[in-house]
Image (cartoon, rainbow, N blue to C red; front, side, top):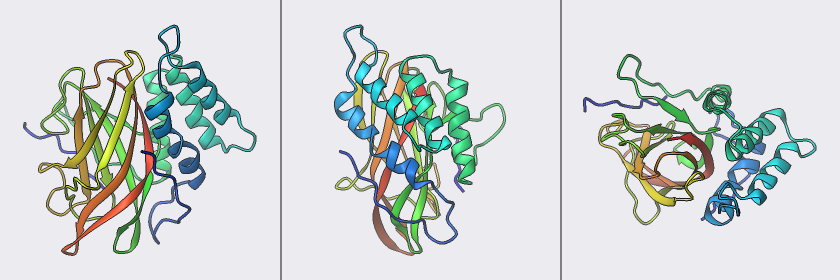
Amino acid sequence: MTALAAPAVATAAPVAAAPAAGAPKVDQQTLDSVGAFFPAIIGSVATPGPDGKANPALISQATALATAKGVPPQVGAIWDQVVGFLNNTAKPSQVAKVAAANNKAANNDPIIPTGPNAPKIQQFLYPTIGFGCTPAGNSVGTALVTAGPQAAPAPGPARGQAGYVYTSLGTGPAVDNARNPLIAIWINIDTGRTGQINLKRNAKINAVNGPGTFTAIANTGRGRVLSAIYGAVTTKNNNRVNSCTIVPTVGLSYI
């Protein structure tokens, strides 16, 4: 389980592998379908069309994946929300509902503080897998975004900023690794602004005993922000530093 603290103050191809024994199940077809596609979208084809809106080819690709023969309902629901997000027909509550259902199905709901100062989160669309992240094997990873202004993740995103949080369940505390980082790439499809930022250890979130939690605050600007987190997770497990690759995971956020 993971805790998100609200203090007072390149494409990685999915690899066919099963989670470690006892780990929550993550649907491999979801990872193959969605995880492999998004870094390529954000890195190359996510450019505005002649009308300044999301590239029609991008929407066509997502629509084709949503309606492909034999696609399981869970995968089709994800792609339907992607299409709605891109063409601005989906509502934030609809996207949040799909993300929450997918995370709950994998038994990966993060522990979020409650009360008047609780962070307002937007979960990524599905949990993912880090291969060989724990002494026992693979780790399930969860990701979310907080839209500013709010206090979490520390030091807190301001208005027009997105706070990224990725947690590798079952691992020890996070370790920064500049040579093999965990990366968030994003595009604001309402403004065309794009960016990339490394997620790093946060001294205020699960920094002593884990699980490994990595955060970053990006200047996305306000609008609909399409994101992917990919790369490597580095944690300290039983006094040994371990680095492992994750399958990309995807977020649709309203900033």
